[in-house]
Length: 409
Image (cartoon, rainbow, N blue to C red; front, side, top):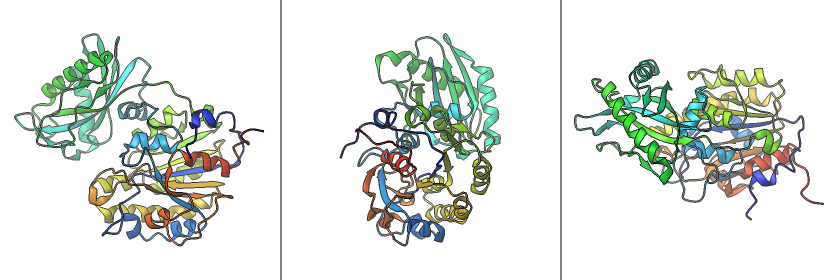
């Protein structure tokens, strides 16, 4: 049954209570069922399996059947926002997550330092995944050398490893511009392309920035160029407090996910370094638990990173690392627990995929499946269904936490 948008349905029904909801996002959690065990099936996770026996299980669809979700849309879907209606680019999330002020008249871009050959073809889209301490000074070089293009001010902000965020501020900018990343190597970056006529100036500025960066960086062996991704303005959108009367907090180490949280009005624990372990993040969760918050977003990144590298064993090890910490989380006695991913990242595919995401809902009225494991097979057969829209998880969590009034008389 098709449900109305949460942005329409929830505001009149939501009510503030003292019950606490915990959303754990194991990034890229899902795998693909087939000849090989998935990372979740390889992992020895007795604590997750015990929790699954008390929970309702299912597999969620972030966007639609057959559509592969990026990290931003995947998270917005989990948080109850229709990712097709919410027009938010990765550049904006990256910039916000780095603590950069992005206004409604700015355009933000997430960039990769890359390695180009003498003919301008991509040898490595991520410049060898260069270390953060090597990449960070390059932002200063670009700021000093560029600064302004036409009547547009340009600032570059160092991100993690090979990533950076660039913010463009000036008149007449529109963020509807296609990426310059061709997603494959052996070809040049593609020219920026305006997706709407109003974005033609921004496309021209983006190309000029990439050309200027190539001049500044060109004598380097590795990071001698840039590719531009997630070009985006800042939309106006309701916060979690406005949609669901929640007092949310984010515990995440990576900028893009903190950016999602900032945009939704969550309190962000910015003191968490990018090098924080899962145990470090659980410690912050414990320290934050007695605060006024009633919605806790805990993000784990490396399940996705290892999936993208095609390393199922390493991905399974991250799941096991989280599993060992689950007793500390349960000791906090949350009223509702959701454990899921923003999308699937099967190791055999070495990238994001469209496959449904294993999901677990534990709460006082969640109707447990009474299964014995938490994996894709068990979730596929679970009570929540094999293709539950991910936007439904927020509603189910709110209902189990007694945070929704009755609809109608």
